[in-house]
Length: 313
Ligand SMILES: Nc1ncnc2c1ncn2[C@@H]1O[C@H](COP(=O)(O)OP(=O)(O)OP(=O)(O)O)[C@@H](O)[C@H]1O
Image (cartoon, rainbow, N blue to C red; front, side, top):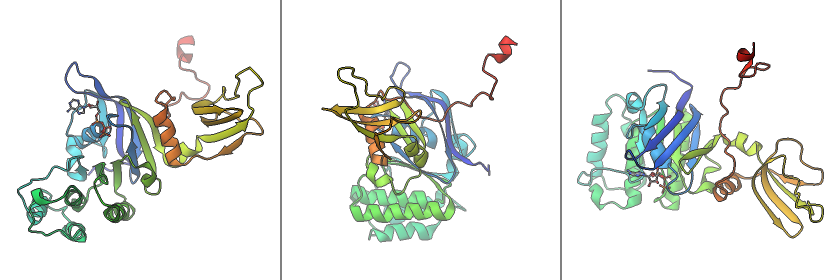
């Protein structure tokens, strides 16, 4: 087994469907440390499912690389649990047969007790055929299969979307317990940002096939400030005082300025500041697709040695 402190990493990762098709994902670079719970958010068609399918090894990159648990996705497959958005299962099998198939496919790794506990918490009849189950009940079976495999990395594509509020709460709790107890890395896409704030510690925000925000949620929140000020611009100048900072979103209503910025130095005295919530941060980036991305910097040049120092020597 490869020991690595990086669960998932991408470099220059891109995917296009068909040789002349548009890019579903392009220039993706990020590193997700092992043991994190990572939210993947972004608008419809942003590339979230494509990214998860690339990590699961179900799609091959058109360019760049994706590294999973220190190796390539195909080699990591036995150590990865993947639940696709449409929860593909065999419709003609019963719930019990589906779990038995999971056990047969994962010899030496299968945790039957976990699978049965998850299924019975939903009061599913083991003899019921998959095709007779509701969408949320199928999701429960798919999650039981993925968790009982005892993966080191769980890739979940909108796992909570069709679950009722109680099932959501229960299964999110099961996932968090798994992450806490076994250090399982969880990557899950979701549109319900408010729900992610308490459970996730890492964020990937994808938009237009690009990674726009990547990093620990606390670091991303610390890098941003909500500001508000009264009468910021001297009459008629239009100067809001925001210019030195990276502005994600700003609004001037009458004499009132409010904005979400990434400060690049001290903010003017008299401005009111507050830390944004995760939901405020994500919504501001979703509303402003042109906002400058914040993703891990390329390795910095050693201090005092600019890139072309050797050429000049
Ligand atoms: N099999 C495919 N063939 C052609 N284009 C595809 C295919 N799968 C995805 N795409 C395109 O790739 C882009 C990204 O799709 P993807 O499913 O990854 O988005 P998403 O962020 O998961 O969206 P959603 O939130 O709606 O699930 C979209 O423009 C989509 O039309």
